[in-house]
Amino acid sequence: MRLKIFQGGDYDALAGLYRGGWECSPDVSRGVTQIIGNVRERGDSALVEYARRFDDSKFDSSKLRVPIPMHEQARALVPHEIVEALALARERVEVFHRRQMHDDVEYTEDDGTRYGFRARPLDAIAAYVPGGTAALPSSVIMSVVPAKLAGVPRIIILTPPQKDGRIAAAVLFACWLCDVDELYAVGGAHAIAAAAYGTQSIARVDKIVGPGNVWVTEAKRQVFGSCAIDGLAGPSEVLVVADDCANVEYVVGELLAQAEHDPMARVAVVSESRALLDACAQLLEATDLETVDRGTIVRTVLERGTYLVHARSRRQIYDVIDRFAPEHLSLQVEDPQSYLPHVRRAGAVFVGDQTPVACGDYLAGTNHVLPTSGAARFSSGLRTADFMRTFSVVENTRERMLSDANILATLAEFEGLPQHARTARMRAALRNDTI
Image (cartoon, rainbow, N blue to C red; front, side):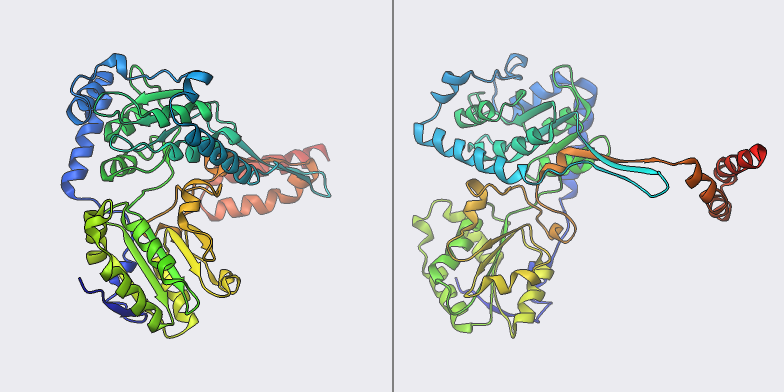
């Protein structure tokens, strides 16, 4: 395996790095449509059928809703060090996301007209937690804690059962730790359909959040409009900005860490230092992937989704960041603070060589549900505001309404809406009548 070093201005060669947008095969899209239609028509019986097909051949409706264990039982499910680690993660996520809360806006103009901007929690949300082959309790924390802070009264977890029909013990513990209201052993596109439209056992929700595979993500896309979604999550991404001062092992470590997620992951380094890029290439090529866990997945990413980019200038580095809009941006440079003002598009930024991306996955307190596939151009990572809706409030005084009536009516008539105009003119007419 030989890794190529690309030039920062070669946009054709870097098209794979810069491609964005959600895509799935027509077969997946049609399959998801069929699954959603089946769940809408048949409800729980469809969920059981799909669970038997994809997860547990002995699955039945009694396994659909999973009781969340009580305190001592929950703590006994996982080793003590995992209990302590997840508790620390939950605490830090709560601290970071609590600081995102804002008071309602209320103010009064000089003429007495009153304005408001108010936020209220959604009534119910579903958090999807990937599972089946691996336990991901951290995803419970990232989705549920901000929703709790926002005041959402009903929070459900959807997660596929393991082959034995059970939910992973660490996920059960995380559900207790985060005070989840309802837990369901259902995954895949059928879980998304159940949350969006409801079944006999699962009441519909206002919003679905959390990452998943291509079937889950396409299902979220198709149900959007019946409920809200957080976004369309594609494969993992990282862009490392490095200079001559960077530790090559740290830089390569970030690439390998994201590469192990998914064979479609995209990992990249951009640097003005050709020597640094050469050293990264040599270390990656020398890595014995036969001895690395998930080595087959990593090899696929190194062969198809790895970009070592040589930039001519700092400006070109910023251009690479903007065009890629990476899920994770790692600044492993001598003066990272000088780069931050120029960062416009990234899901999350990790500053300095002592801040691996894995911090954000688990313990930093920032959220690991992040935009991918270039979506950082227009969307953000999961935050407390994602679990709230807002509305404006205005209360005119008589003075304000009389002052605005003719102007308002003129604008409405200009846009061809005479009844709109009439609502303003009748109030102006009332003034004339009283005179």
